[in-house]
Length: 69
Image (cartoon, rainbow, N blue to C red; front, top):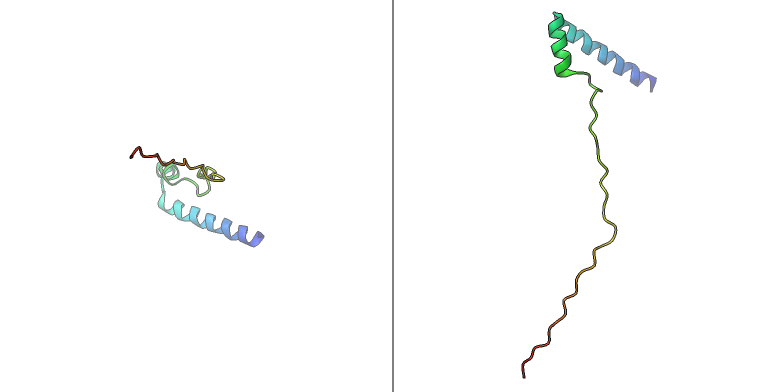
């Protein structure tokens, strides 16, 4: 687990070095940070999906008696 975290930190550091090469001015660094942001910054809000237990009772249609004589 520690090795995994170490690899993640190295990957983040490498990404930061690449960004530093591209963003040479403070204005470019600021714009890049607002556009790209950090990888772990945003998490989607996941709503729980509930399923209905059981079925709804069906309406029973009664046959009508015909008045044929």
